[in-house]
Length: 613
View (cartoon, one colour):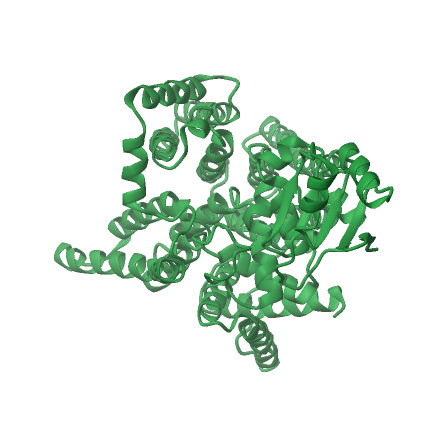
């Protein structure tokens, strides 16, 4: 199927869900991400019952049917949606979002974790049509929930499987969740506050620099969906039914993204409880009954998909990597002595206090901006606001997250990884991104209240206290707008630069010698890699497993052996891939098979290596 036709089918299906949810009262700024999460949850049910491919077709075609129905009803002026208008942030999202999609479509996957799990999971479901079982050794991290993989699988089912289409799919999920922040604006016609949120969204990618958008890892997905969930709870605070359904949907989907989503779900639960306490109507004794029921029902329903997944993992896989287990945590903790724990704690504290830490800089930035604005509004403009309280709240969240992160290092990681704080900045970036976006929404609402005219209908180019205040507003808007565009464009050019720098990485070398396989198999493939580090950390093996879709691809660098041993070792495999010149392998091939082999992909036969083009 032509990729563009498939993309159109997907978008039409998604639009059908979007329009339906909006008619049920969902905010137009939350409708896109809510539609995606609803589809993920429906696909999850199909996948768990072994009907993934059928589910993808039913979910998509049902969305198109909904779109046709609503389009037909609109001719009789029934069910028409209110047009929200086109705002500056819509143009920013569309223009720069399209530019980023164009970049990602041409981007290769190179990060280790793409091949150890995220990309190989999508490839597995795309070409087998089902979740992995105990016999499917290709998938190593079998306890990882499949939410993003299901979403990407649905997208590539229609648009075609490639690195680029997978990256575009994940970006659409991120961008849809990012669009929800504009639901927090008091007045969407104000250019300054709109561009301030655009600028914040662009800045958030700076803290994602360890991963960037040209990877399928979920370190950005987790916080952005959590922020969308919080915004929805705020927007629906006066609509109890929609509030509860929204919370259940977002908790359900978020817990299926990754096991570590628990911290974000706790944040959602706490804020949901706060909104129920402050917005529920009726007598105190009525609230005493209704609030716990709403809280328990919404969170309970939201956790059901994850509980189903946990049951699936325990009953399907005897041993599962990264499975949540109190017994495993206890064993890990007992295996480490107090000296090791103290060393990890010392390294952890030093990292937090270091000004070279990007996450620490982010925390300082959030505090300085929020407290600075609070001082300006409170002392100079004599206007009460909650920014100081918001700053304290975000700092408490940071401290709690530090605690959970430290717990992960001492409970889940081997000492060799924990002592170097493996992945610290990557994990902390997620919480910095979350709190940056939360703080920005509180900030722009205070900035809006600082406007001279509070009646939205009366706001115009004349509604300023003085000509100087008008000039300041216009200049500030231009500056913030310029940086919002520049920062996002910088992320696009940064991704392009990364792609160029990665041109000689193993996955791209592989693409130059062989075509990827899409039929799941058990062929033994030897990946000859002169880079020792790629072999020692299993990167070469994982790339080979993904590329050739086999659970028996192995990377090897050391070929210091006799010709007889070399011949015997090579003949243990069905194929050999040589993405980069390996001098020792070339010399031994010449001696044993009398063939001059430099790079390429070969089938191993009794008479030597047969090149496959």
